[in-house]
Amino acid sequence: MADSGHRVDNGSHASFTTVYRSMVDLELARPPAAEIEAYWRRIGDQIRTYVRLRNEASESLAAANNATLHALTWEDAHVGVTGRFVRAAPFLAIASALAPGSEMTATLDSGDLAPASWAALHTAAAADYRPGGGRAYDMLQAALAAPADLTLAPDAATVAVDSGQPHDGTVPVHLAGPYVLTWTATTSAPWLAVAPASGTMGADPTVTVLAAGLTPGVQHGTVSFSAGSSDGMSFARSLEVTAVLAPRVVRMEQESGALSQHVTVPVDLDALGNEANVALSLAFDPSVLGSPQVSAGAGAGAAAVTVDDSQAASGRLGVTLVMPAGQTFVRGTDRLAEVTFLVAAGATGATGVGFADQPVARAITDATGAALTAAYEGTTVAFASPAHRPRRHLARR
Image 1 (spheres, rainbow, N blue to C red):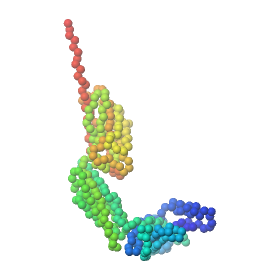
Image 2: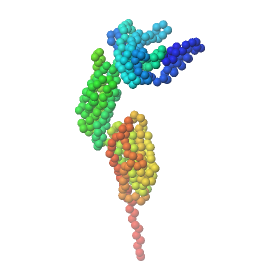
Image 3: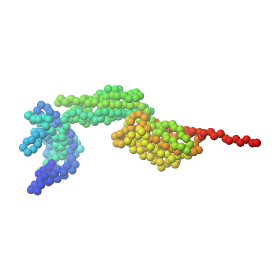
Image 4: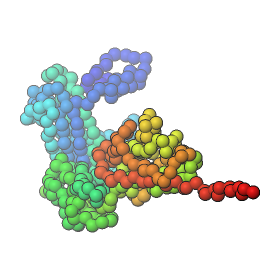
């Protein structure tokens, strides 16, 4: 019995299934010694396989160790005691040394496969060699070939630009497909740019939203990608981009309160839709507003809210909101939190409540952890004057 060639077992066993399963499990636990990306397509009655191979082994792959790249095509059909059989196995000897960390590409064609049930055909690419020049072949890695296509990730993106501090936004794009494809990109709006604007597979572009070209509000644009090959393939994909230009503001609403009573100060975020984490500190006069208590606002969504009241006695209160991975606050006005204070009995007029950086520094980040800009607006809390009580006059007789 042999696994990939790394282990061979000879002799009799009470259970061949148990022994072979153990060999396969040990083989699966080994780190791959190559990285393979493969695609296939039908051309007439043949299968063409496009392979990209990266050598992850500790030695070069070359003729000296019989390094070989294979394309195995099999059909799901009952033949003898098996449920499949190999229909074609073209291969390519790796003659030129492929050093560790280096890549190569190859196209392998099968012979005629007709008659065949084409819907039941599958193809895998594999690479093997004889490590150290030994006698046994060992498989470096194998990968199931995907149908030839052009894939694009992401296919939709929203870029928010703070109009108070406008900066260009970027969207990294990953293109995948057979290595023989070349692609070009075009944009539908002057505020969209792509660099590079053309290339081969592996040369991923970046889409840039040009802040200077945006108008206030929401706008939509498209980046169209077309790809083709000299052997007749042609694909088209598009990235839909939504750009938002608006101010991002963290602010508190103005409130009024009665002496010796509780007053609640709301904290709102005018969100652009890409904010994932918000951290801030409130600054207040502790002789006027005391015993602060924080509760999550209706717009906090699934955010985890953490309160740092270690400096509350000095008039500082930290609040942090963290959304679950991949989630952001909803675009628009979101009520992040509500802070309730107890108004001092001797309070008069009004008092300010502002933002500070202690005990928690102000920060807003997106889902990737990138810093976002914002304006911060504090507020005032006014106090109702005590009701006038007329003095009592006594008449003398």
